[in-house]
Length: 271
Image (tube, rainbow, N blue to C red; front, side, top):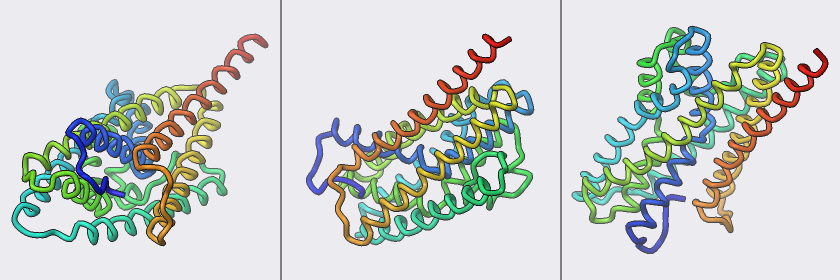
């Protein structure tokens, strides 16, 4: 799932990698981390809390660009096993996605509404999970970039799209990937901030809806990746899959906001 079999034009390559970055930003682990960071910042009255997704993406991008540069450097000197890197990374991603789904299903069954849970987020020190500052958002994003799923994806994309392109070509690929990721992550924190700024009773409903959305997304993406590893070939290209994931995320937000607005309007009429 890393790219085309035949060379792409520069414009098509840039668009493809940007779309793959959009998809990466919609990973449930990203959503869970940004959800947590935004809620922490909002509860502490941080003015920048609505932009914590952008700060998270900034920290994450440091690792993305470093990994891309390293892949470009090594790829120009030795033959890296790109297919093996992608396969191992895909299995890590599958396990992570189903673990996220299991954590959140347990949370929903216990009627907790503390936000969605991610595997990487759960592994962070409690002090960092409870942090409320913008620097913490960047640090969490940086640490998330150390995960093998991110490393393998970026390395595989850099190798697939920059055959003979060296370090500069790989860094350009990493930059476009990071820009796509930043769009989704920033939009995530902006919309989550809006949801969590509501009345407490509405917040409970919004939070449960969001946890269910992250859980469903984790199951769908995990099942999709598992089916491909087992030999199934999707009739849709990666660009289309990326578009569906991001559109689904936006759809959940739009539905939740619309529902809350209708409830607020109804309450104002009754009052």
